[in-house]
Image (cartoon, rainbow, N blue to C red; front, side):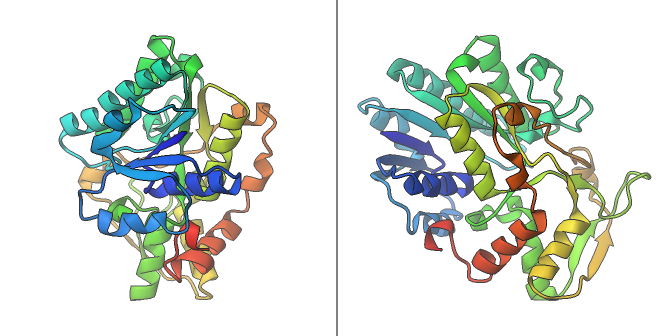
Length: 324
């Protein structure tokens, strides 16, 4: 049996879609359905094939009696502005440790979502080298919780039994329930269709022009393709999941306008003070480790084409990945 935590979420539902494409449907889904966001999240299950779905609270009761082949642990509390670190610690760190130890007991494979947020401001680079984990300085509680789990696996010699995926800025169908945590592609689409223009943060770094803050944006289909590839090939350890090419927010917004056949209209406003202290002005995955596995990274690089597909096939119609 395949287990996917966060299976009704963004990357989780896309991964299940990919598993289905490979003929895999003996899947148990676990997710949190107690918040208002669940009123939208359940739609991500549309068109997907799976054995059963459970609330996250039932995870260990169900799995204690289940034969498990692999656990894809993609569920997490993803808010980067959560002020109660105790909540984030329980959801993202303690729960993950318990689930990993269960996988060891069951002798099942364990694949989990880490995050590019663990790299902090990037002063130590964006290399997926486990030996450099101790140098990283996360900027918010979410990133710290992910970093702590990476460190716990590394310090205890457990990474040889786990595959950690450091997702960079993922965008694509299935993120509609994420509210403010959606990708900026989705936010830009809403702003354009509702207001006719997009608002971007002004730069607070003199050498960076307004809107030229850059991120490594990766399409969700590519993110799960990398995840499935590394799992299928039997890799362990930590791998970056990005394109290796950063794009500016100006480029992103212009790509959304282009997909809608509209002229770009962008306004810039001051970055809120509470955002500045945890804002990443630049991220770009070092994907040399991924390249070394033989993965064809060139198929990741059509940024404008990926944005266009997301807008024209999904956002315009409000479709999930299983509905197209």
